[in-house]
Length: 538
Image (cartoon, rainbow, N blue to C red; front, side, top):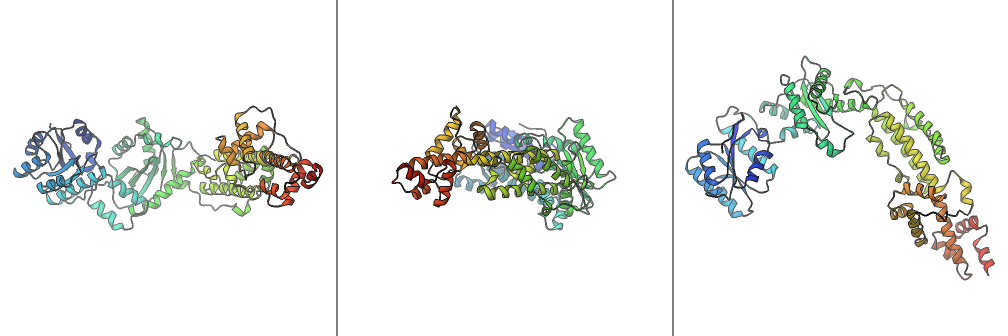
C-alpha cells in the first residue's frame, strides 16, 4: 500500500503482518523529526518485496516472520535484485541464530519487540548519517541528529553543559537549525504553575510550538519543550525588540485560544555560548511575579540591583516567641505583617531575599521551641512549603497560619499559655464519646511504662501529630503533656500502694532517671511525696 510522500530527505516502508503493529509504528514515531517519509505499508513478505523493487526506499523496516515470504527472504531477494535499501529487522524472537542470519543477509539492525524507541532512533540516525555522506542527496554535508537530540543539545546549552563553543558552531553549520551564533536572547514560557503535574502533562505543547514557529518563520529562532512546565525560545536579535517578541507570543496564543504562559525575557548576549546567562536572567525575572501575578511578561529590567537593608542578624524574634507561647493570634499576625513589611526596602526586592529571610525566621522559631520542648517541632509544618507560593500575600498568610498552628500545637501539648494548669491534677472529661480519644487512651494506658511520643499516639489514630494534639486538647480540655503526666502518676500511685515496692523502681518504670524528679512530679499532682504516701499506706 503506497502512501503520499512528504518532502523529507529519506524514504522508508514498513512491513508487518499484524495490523496493530503496522499502524502503531506508522503513528507513534515522529518520522519528520528523523527526516524520514513513510511511503508505503506492506502486510506480508511478497507485498514488501514488490514495494521495495518498485519504490527503492532508503530504509525498509520489516518483521522477520510474515506470510508468503519471511523478512530474511525479502532481504535476500531484494539484495539479489540489486536493491540499495537498508533493512531494519523487527522480531519477537530473542534468538542469536535469527540475528546472525539477518546480519548475514545484509540487515543493518536486528531489534526486538516491543520496540525500544531510543534504540530504534539510534539505528535510523546511524543509517541516515551514512547515507547523507555517501549518497548524492540535497544535503550532503548535513549532520543528522537522532530524534530528540536537538532538544538535548539545547537543554545542555542553556544548562551550561556545553563547554566548547566550537561544538555549537559545528552543529549550526551542519544542520538546518534556524539560528546563528550571533547576538541573541532567551525567552522562558512558564505555563500553569497552579495546575497539578498530570494536568500540565496534558497541555498541547506541540501545537503551541507549531503556532509560534509559524508566526515567527521569518525570524531566526528556536522553540522547544524544556520540561512539563516550560517552553524555551532562543531568538537572534532583529528589528523587533525582545519585549515585542514576547507580546507577539501572547497574542498568537490568545488568538488560537491556547493556554497563556507567563514569559521571562533574558538579557541579550553576544552569542549562543552565553545563553545560560540570558536563561537564568529570564528565570529570575519570572520570579518577580511575586509582586504582580497579573502581568504576563517579566523582563530582566525587573531585576532589583539595590542591596538589602535587613539581614538575618537584625531579626528580633523574641516578641514572636512570646506571642506563640501566649497563644496570642493577633500578636502573631501583627508580627508577621511587620516582618514582611521590613523586607520591602524597595517596592520589589529580590524574591529570593524575601523567601530566604522568611525561611530563616521560621527556622529560628523552630529551633527555639525544639530546644525547650525536647522534640522536633517540624512535625507541625514545613518551611520548604514557602517556596510553592507565587504571591507575597500567600507568604504573609502562610507565615501567620503556620505560627498560629505552632502556637496551638505548643499549647495542646505543653499548656504553656496556662502554666497553672500543670500544678493541678487534670482529669480527662470522662463523658467524651469519641473513637479517636478512646483509641488514644487505650494506647497510652497500654504503653504507660514506655517513653510515649506524640507521633506514636497519632499514628494509632491516623492523624498528623500536630492535628492530633490540638484535637485531643479541644475534645478533653487538657493538654497532652499533663494527661500523660497524670496517667503516669496514677500508675505510680497504684504501684506504691504496696509498701514493699521500691520507689526508685517505680520511677524508673515510668521513665524517670532520678528519684528527685519523680518525687517532685508526684507531689505536684497529689500534694505528698512518694515516701510519705507509702508511709501513710503502711
